[in-house]
Image (cartoon, rainbow, N blue to C red; front, side, top):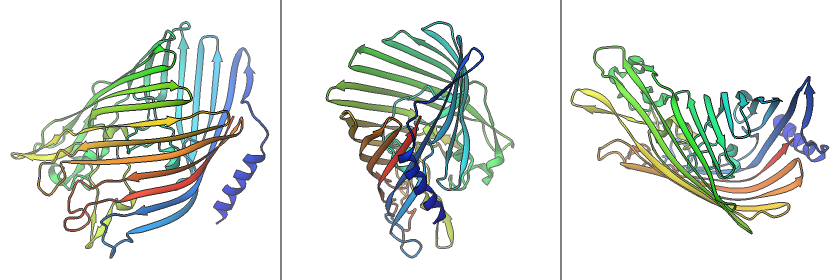
Length: 414
């Protein structure tokens, strides 16, 4: 109760805060800018749990909530001649108050067209995202969108010639921990022990992002991503496993006044490494039925399969996309959008699904109260699909239900 009163008081203070245009100051010959953003989300969350046996959990529930969203941050930018540095700290109280060093990188600009960046920064792959705010600024992540907040340690070269821009980045390898989690993999890790393998990286990941404006009202944004790492067996009863991830995306933005249209389609293999491919409901992970814990089988993660006498990984394909239409006006921007994604499972068995899918849709409206304060009411629907295991929620049942959230996001930034 005290936490909710504190957050509601913070919202009132935001409404009464003086205008900010950012805080600029000089340190010697260097120019520095201190910025911050606080995003508070309040709403009602209705969950229908699908085929879950009501002896173990209710089939539906509604919760009211107030939280600080994950993108809330404090950031500092410093420029000195051709050199620049940026750092960003993010915080949230979604479950427990946490602080994360989201970005810290340096940049050197050779001239107006060429620059190089090094450090921890947003990934160069799939830089577009829908403007969907609820569910911790989810941006339809896991329901047709790709994680807009994905980041990596990297070295990136950028070229910008106005109508054409190119980013080429060498990034840290991202591993999918679910591959070696026997709970999620139904105990099929060789020897029943996830420590049977160690991860070895030989080459960095590579991401290439293009930005092309053939005409002023049209932007085309294709990008590619590729990486590979090896699971090296510690014992003699397993074989080396190469885990290869690749992804392609194509984003388009058209300014057709009075409306703007943004859309993106994407396709790839073993995309679980990107983190946001599968955000299905946490109340199923795990769920205890009949005295045993059952775990969902994740989307986008390779599956272990017994081939002869050896367990091998089977690659999985995931694809999807999203579409958004908005109508910007002077102080308000109404918007609707939706997304869909589908993943192969890598399992050929009559008791398991060959494919699973999710989809989501939203409607919201940005309302500019002040230059530094934005309010966005929204309604969000997320369909969770099915689990891979057809008997996940008892004999012949695996529907995971859906979720509907109605609420408002308030963003104070300077």
